[in-house]
Image 1 (cartoon, rainbow, N blue to C red):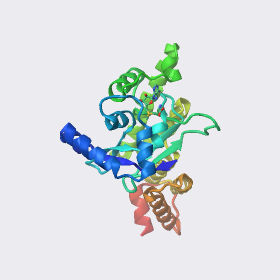
Image 2: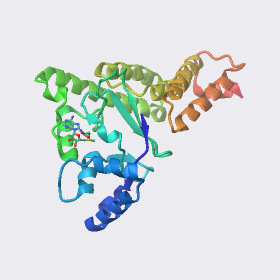
Image 3: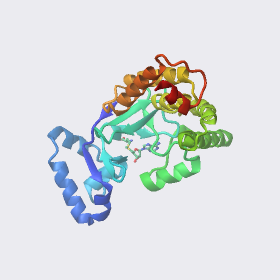
Length: 277
Ligand SMILES: C[S@@+](CC[C@H](N)C(=O)[O-])C[C@H]1O[C@@H](n2cnc3c(N)ncnc32)[C@H](O)[C@@H]1O
């Protein structure tokens, strides 16, 4: 699912503007939307407070990073219908290039099954997550994990998520700290633990990382295999932002150029480039 924001409000504007000024400008913005979009915004009104648009934005606007420095709150009409679940079946990502919000399934979602996402970072532990949902989103989570009386299941889930967070962090740091061999082992564990918890990494991203790590340890064959998997996976997403797809295509091309006429077994990255020249 791909959609564009009905409204995108800079966080600095929301924080800095005086309340009456902010409300006036937001209202004026909404009044200028095309009729169908404007009606869609007002249809999100549930809780009756003093300010209709505040009531609409508070439980529905989602935080997105527009540039490295600029965060914004985006109101996406379809996305606003999606509930939170601590064991979600989908994840979302925002493209600062196209301003699209894309929802991807973690696994096959059956017809009639509700699509859910996590409103919290996935590695956040259970108690912290509940507190965050209360404080930031203003609701008590009613998902099945939160209703579970099985303490062991909740604690196992917390451990897996903590491990997923650690592994992801370590794997992403591997390139700068040069522990590629270990990172490949950790990447495999990241995938396994993530799958067991039902929150595997986005496969296109994962394949891309493993391709680059394989290259770094001098395994050109695996680098190409995973780069191809990454390229296929980005193609299947039908992403409206072609940045990742183009990067994957270019990386594959680079590996193919390197592969031609260069006999490589397992050797260091520096050697690989020297031999290829
Ligand atoms: C973005 S809206 C989701 C769609 C909304 N349920 C609707 O009917 O339009 C967010 C609001 O949905 C409710 N909600 C979402 N996930 C929930 C959950 N796991 N437990 C309880 N309420 C939830 C909360 O009231 C929250 O403020």
